[in-house]
Image 1 (cartoon, rainbow, N blue to C red):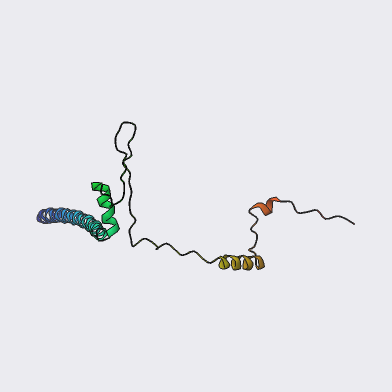
Image 2: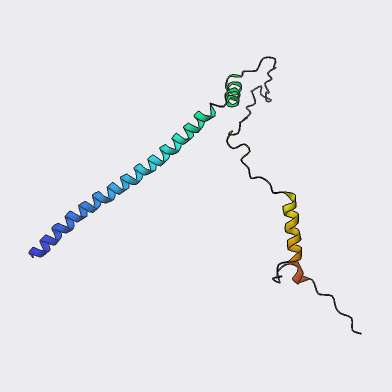
Length: 141
């Protein structure tokens, strides 16, 4: 009987410790998720701050937000059928992303690949149009 009482006390104490452990793990996971979200938000804010260093972006924002025009320019406002201003969504690209696209290959690389393919064609798998065409019948002499 005494062993049963000791076992019950141990189970109760371990259960409360396990419940506290699970709650703490849940809290840690929630905090880690919040940290990741805040880091992403900080990254977006740093990107926005960096964009404000670009004079073209500042000029675009001044034109868009305040309707500024350069000296000698004439501003026009497009209106819809109700007389409301039509909102356009001009957006400048990120200066770092301009010109970062993959460079195209030279035309002679494609031509040489064609020459190599013609000299050593891949084996026919039996799938595709060549398997659907009947071979020409040979004439019997």
